[in-house]
Structure formats: C-alpha cells, structure tokens
Length: 213
Image 1 (tube, rainbow, N blue to C red):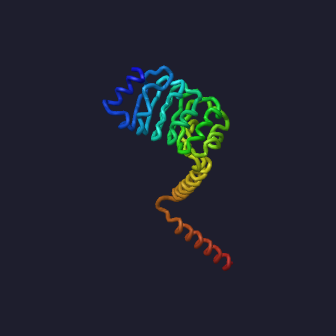
Image 2 (cartoon, rainbow, N blue to C red; image 1 turned 90 degrees about the vertical axis):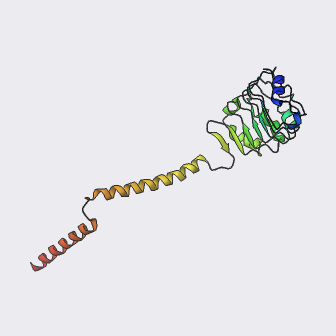
Image 3 (cartoon, rainbow, N blue to C red; image 1 turned 180 degrees about the vertical axis):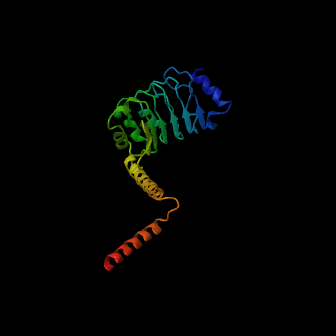
C-alpha cells in the first residue's frame, strides 16, 4: 500500500487535527513524504519506518510533534527541514540510514528540545570520536544510541566507575568466602579456642618440669 492510501486508512474517518499518533511503517513511498500535511496540527508521534524515504524535504510544519521515527530508510542529509518545521521535537530515530559525516547532523543544533537521538547502524557511528563529537555538537542531548553498548546517558557514571564499584563488592564476597574456608579447616567437633587453651596448658606444664630439673 502506498503512503497516501495508508494515511487515509489510518485516519479512520477522523479529521487530521484529531490525530495525535500516525504510524505508517512499511508502506511504499516514492522516496519522499506523501499525504501528510500541516492539517495534522496536533500530531505528537509520526512513524515512517522502512518506507523507502530518500528525503525529508516534504515534511510539513508540525509544531506539536515530539517523536519522529525514520529508521531503515535511505536518508543521507537535508535535516535542515526538520529543524525548521519540527521545532518541539524531543526524540529522533535515524537508525539504519545513510549518514556518514558529523557535519550532516549539524542542523539538529537548531532543535533545542531534542533529548534523544538514535543513529544505530549509520556509518557515522564508525568514527573513532563519534560519541564525544555528537555530544559536543548537540549539547542538548540526554540520550545517544549508536554504539555497540546501546543506549548511552549523558553524565552517567562511566563503565570504569561501575567496574570499580562492582570490583569492591566482588572483593567483599571473596573475603567472606575465604573466612568460610578457614572455618571449614577446623574439625567439625573441635572447638578452636579450646584447642588453643590445651596447647597453652601443655606449654606451661613443660616449663614447670624444666624448672624442677
């Protein structure tokens, strides 16, 4: 089903102004957005996953849109349109697209409300300083996904710090296990304190015999 027909189907005889979520995943397009107009003035979520998009130039002005899903398309640039027409966007999923350079993401600087960005499986994530570069370019971001480690939270404890904390816990557990092992060395029916007392008594008796000699 092509995108225009899918839009009509999803409306279900409602006026566009009443629609808050519009999911058009896996429909067919001619490489651009079709059938979505500024009449969707209250739209908060728009999902266009795997629809064959090459461009977002025809995205209309949607002031209330907060979440835009564009994963698994063929988009490689042109994000200026999003910055101009989706001013309140908070979540943007661009995973599985054709972004190769950090510079192609610069227009997103003009989205002050943008908190979450997903670039998983985009070539740009192969850059060595990818994470630092994105956070430097887009300081408003809170979450960035696009590395093997998955979702990364800005200003969260580093993996090394977590490792140290876990290491301390592991050390305490090891010490507890060692204490248990030491207890097991003693015979089950033998009282360690009593054994030490008998040894000290024998030593004193031996000293007394020496004095008598």
